[in-house]
Each structure stands twice: as structure tokens, then as C-alpha cells.
Image (cartoon, rainbow, N blue to C red; front, side, top):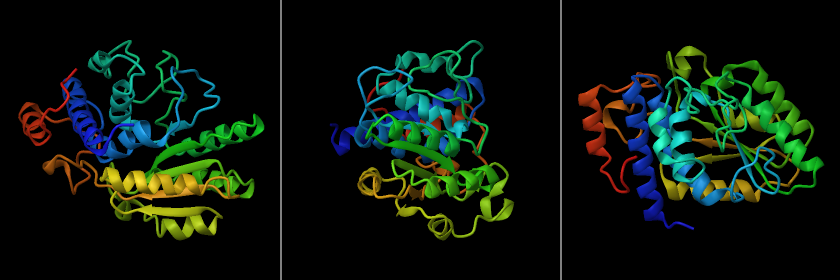
Length: 281
């Protein structure tokens, strides 16, 4: 298992991948991708128990579902760096006929991707279905999912959240990227979410907070704690407090980079803030 410095090096490289991918096609979502970099690096290199190779059924291994599919750049980078497909394929991001579309799809058979996502609010339902399938199959592994806080403004989530607790789907760990920002502004400005901890607890979930959501050690500690709570009769929610655009100073503390690519000058500044450690694709 990689040590903390090795994981930090991977996180730096993933940030470089994200920036180069969206810059090349002048399209994509760097803000949330940068904010969730440490989370993805920790999940795929420390937390999840994964089989060698990839098959859609995922029997005998942990599963991950990305609900807020617009942060596909970080997803693709981490999958490639983990060996699911060639790193060089990151060059095809958002190009015609590429397997790496702006939102993850399944029709081209990209290893690591089990659902098409980006239609916000649906990932929770899919993750619950996968978790129930594992229970029916006697599979003791865990299903993880990631959701944007803004997408919790959609009602389907709360039907699913109620169902998961009511049916004791206790092999599900759903993480909320709680950065307080969405495409049109802050979540408080667009539609206030209220106290998410109290809401999930009121629906019958166990809830953990990871206050330092951009620090690998805190994420690993928090996600291990979440896993220790699985199998206890209740689904688990992790509130991951991140900063959108983390690691690039001019992208932080604003929602402006939710879905905007850097220009040439901005790219060079951002790459300077994330010095090369592993080598670009």
C-alpha cells in the first residue's frame, strides 16, 4: 500500500491531469474535480478493496458510484493512474468518439465505470440497488458513492435516503462533497440545504464529518471509521468538507470555476502551483 508521500505525489499528478484535460478542450469541470482529488486518491489507493482487472458485476470487491458525474476529470485521472486504462487515453477527454466523455458513460466500455452519471440526483438510488444486490448474493463488500451537496436539492435523493434506512442497507457508505458551492453560486444562495447531519440522522443514517476534506490523512482516517460502522443496521453518510478548486489559488473560494477551463496563462500558473512529481501523460 502506498505511503502518505506517495499518495501526495499521486494527488499532485492528478491535479495536473485535471488542469491539462479541461484546458486542452476548453471544456469541463475543474472546480469540483480539484476539490475531490484527495478523496479519490485515498479511495482507490487505500480505502477500497478491489479485484485485479475489471468486470461490471464487481463480485467480491467494493464498488464505487459517482453521482455528480460532471467531476469526471478527477475520476478518469485516478482510474488511469490506478491502471484501469492507459494514462495516455486522458488525452482524448471530451473528444468525439472518446471513451472519456464529459460525463461518464458505459456504452464504450470504459473500465472502472459502471453507470452513466451526470443526471444529478440519481446516484444514491443506483448505489442502494447495488448494495442490496450484494446482500442478496451473500457478498460482504461495501458500496461507496459520492454526491455533490447541490444535487441534494433534488427530491429523488430523499426518497432513496429514506428507503436505505428503512430497509437497513448497512453496506452503503454515501459521501457528500460538502463544499457549499454549485454552478450558480453558493448552495445557501441557490437553495439552502440546512443542517445535513441532522437531516440524515433524522432519516435514520449514521453520519460522520471529515472536516479536513482536502487532507489525505484525515480522509483515510475518516473513511476507515465509516467502514467500521458498516454492517450495524444503518447506512452511513460521510460529510466531506472540501474547498472547490483546492490546490489552485485563483480557483478557490469561488464557484466561478465549477465549469470553466483555464486559458494558457492560467494553466501555466496552476501547473506551477502543482509541480510535476510523476511525469505527465
